[in-house]
Length: 117
Image (cartoon, rainbow, N blue to C red; front, side, top):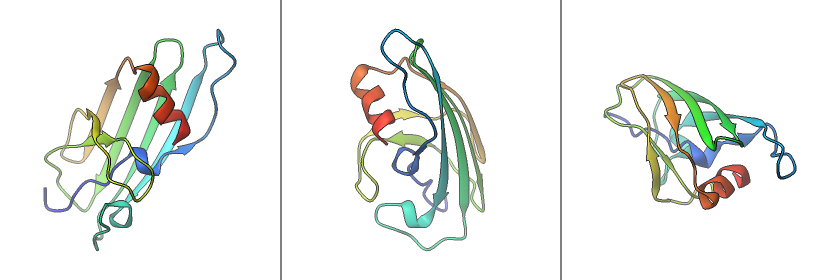
């Protein structure tokens, strides 16, 4: 890949929250991907967007990530706070400019990381 694919989890913005235990809810997230979100930051014109929907009942995360300005060879979700390198949690299916699929079921620690940003 000519430019690294920015780490998605680091830039997720929570657009909802999980309901009380026992009440399933779909939780949407969005992500803006830029070189500034890389660790360390990189100068690039490449950008991307991600949309995610987490189902708290099935523990599955549906995703679509689209990039422009690069032809990626791999995509994946990292755990970690913004600006902090973190381990890969799971790979994304697809490429080189669109990744789409379902990940999971997420474990309780993975769910906690996702919901906390």
